[in-house]
Image (cartoon, rainbow, N blue to C red; front, side, top):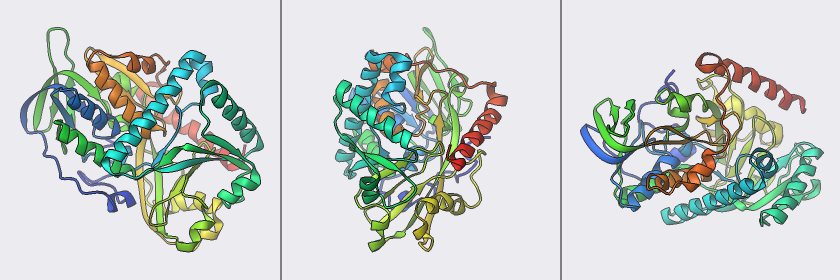
Length: 435
């Protein structure tokens, strides 16, 4: 199944609130005929656009190829939450890589937030501060308090505070959670406008962007032969190749495909809530909870609730996304049963076995970063910059991420999906049972 076309129309953004409120950006022409570049970037999301921007700013001749429109994939469909840290908490990172490496990875994630905020500011995309983490069990809150202390002591991070039951309910009036934490160093924004803004910056810096240019084949180069990237209407010869297609890479690079698994997620947006927004959140923050099939939400500047949740064990989107997401939304906010939902959309993200991004060199002069596991808004922008630096010979940041162990999914191409479905079904059952 080609996920580029299984759930979406060619060259059209999904029917999201983001697409309905996106900033204007001219369409970029498809690649036609023969071309030559120092670097080809495949994928027009945060990773690819950031790579193209930083390469162009460094004076490189760069061509970016996007199968649909820039920001078409997860970069333009996500929950808009700009989170702190890596996908794993620091205790898990310390167990995986040691304390010194964990601290470096934390610092890189903070640099990713700074980079993303800077790109948003230059692009005129507002960022609202504050992301809350909602806990369903007392043990989760106890662990969070220990992590808050560790971050302050060992990582010089002091922007998170713990909120007991009463304090958290004053922020988030729902009976679904026992406590929470609030990270004022994190934030939320319009994700598609961020992608479009970075595309505009990359274009102005001299990057050559081609939309409607799906890559059909890659012929990797070597010491004596250039890399050749082929699309339906054209072909590019290049010195370096950057793979930034994330969940939409398909079978173009088997070494990446073995380690990165596409999964779907779904979001709805409501009509403006007006005075009822205080029934959802009393401050302008984003929220995510601790379910395996995570729920996440925020309120946009017009007062619309944007809520993501609901599991899916198929590569195809469900026929009724509204119904899929309405169920978890009303479990948290039953009083919103009569609120009209105006937009519903699905998106495909990518996960890895250990939930950390997969940084890999699949071939000589080829770099890949993907598999952000739902934590990619900031890290993906950093990944693009790190790959641009690596092309220039400054690979320390890329190599630090690539040093993390990334096992392939078990079962190979035939069995990895059924095994993932079984695992997701088990964890979804745990969510429903409250285990």
